[in-house]
Image (cartoon, rainbow, N blue to C red; front, side, top):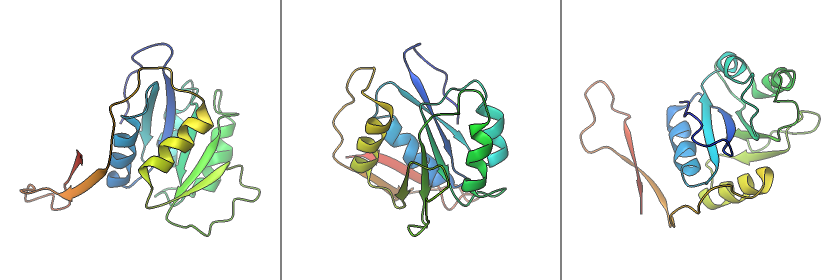
Length: 160
């Protein structure tokens, strides 16, 4: 999901994630972080297509992508203009992944903690450039009450 930049001071974050629920949750988190636009790619190939010229402030890479491992994708992204120096975070359910020699700045283990992610994003990319977001006390993901027959995994995000 790509959102157009609304203001020249806004910055982009590239998130490479093939699981739609994880992408929705991260998108909901980024809706609460002023000045940043989340661009989601679902494969390594798609990331390589959207990254040129994006100049992301941060790279978030799932490790187990359908077409490659995130640690194989990172060096390819680093060769693209604008991606050479952005901090890179491995976002994975594999909490034992060894970051040594991979080029990743840090590892965020799934399931993600909302407050921790928001704090780390701001620490990695710098202070917000827009107005403060509304207060959030919790992010709840629940089964939709009447999902379409062909989509029994449809989830609804709600802020409480």
